[in-house]
Length: 155
Image 1 (cartoon, rainbow, N blue to C red):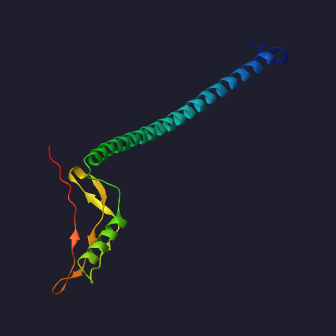
Image 2 (cartoon, rainbow, N blue to C red):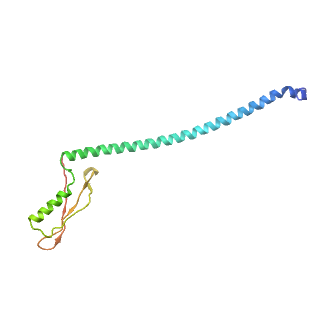
Image 3 (cartoon, rainbow, N blue to C red):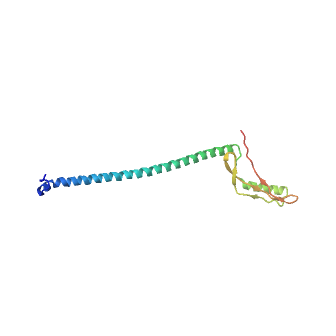
């Protein structure tokens, strides 16, 4: 044993000591690298899980919107087939009111066609509609009339 710690023993084991320290440093580097890689993978996994949840939420939203659009298209087609929805003909309405004014000599017939507004139907469905207010002079006084078109369908 005394021979190991003498100068010639240290010189003889110098290579072994250097290899031992290199192996210990390499082992420590491998442990640190493994830990770093594990933490990086945990972060990447959490990030990709979050992105997957967000993508699934967007997909669910798109599916709901698609289903809603399909339902709306079906309702619209049904209403078009039944003749309830037609192209907007405001100019025709103006010409009709002017013809009525001339035919019945209504000098004070004024009217206003309001912008479109949502018309709520059964089942929470909404379609554009127009209010027409026709104020006019009858024999006495001024009044406002609102023309409302109701679309009712049955089984």
